[in-house]
Image (cartoon, rainbow, N blue to C red; front, top):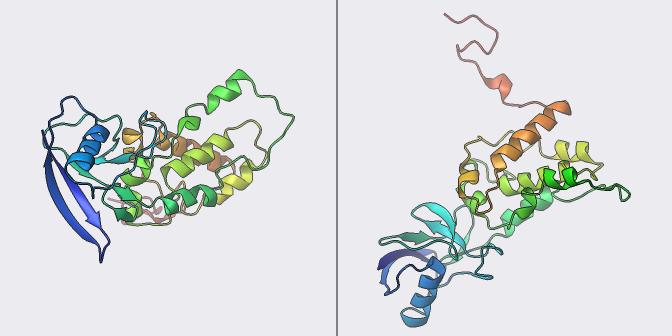
Length: 241
C-alpha cells in the first residue's frame, strides 16, 4: 500500500515536500501506518499521538483534504496525509494549537458565575451532554473557512464550549457570556456546517451557534451585517423592479 505524506520543516526555513511511502500493512489505521514508517523507514517523520482510542484528540490531521483522527481512520491506497489547517506547522504533521485553544479563554468558555446550591436534574445534565464530549482535537478549527478572512474568529469548538455553559442551569452570568461573543463570534459564522461533518464526537457546532444566536436575540443583540444587505434586492426598504 502506498500513501503520500505532506512533510513540512521550519529548519532553516519553512519547506514543503510530498513524499511517498509504501507499507506492507492491511486494514491498518493511519496511526499504525505512521508508526511503521517512522520505526522502519524514516525516523525523521514527526506526528503526535496519545491515547490511541479516539479520546485525547492529539492525532488529528487531514487525509484527502478532510480532518480525521489517525488512530481511527483506516488507510486507503493513495491517501494524501497532511497537517491541520489554520494553525502554524511545527514540523510535518505536528501543529501549534496554542492560538486555537486561547479562543476558549477569549470566549469565556467556562462556568463563570455559578449557583453552588443549584441541583441539576437529569434533564439539565442531558441538555449539554454531547457538548461535554468535545476532545479539543481541533478538527473543526481546521475545517472552518472563516479563518481565511478573520483570524480572530472564536471558532467552532470555542463557541460550542460557550453554549455548553450558557445552557448550564447553574450559570448565572449568561448575559455577560452572550455579550462577549458578539464580535468575532456568533455572527461571523457562515453556518456552512463543515465543522459538524468532521467532528469525531458528532457535535454540531453549527447547531450550537444557531442556539447562541437565538439567545443573543433574546438579549437584544442582532446580526450587525443585516443592515448591509441591499443593492437592489429590496432589503434597504426601496422598491425593486
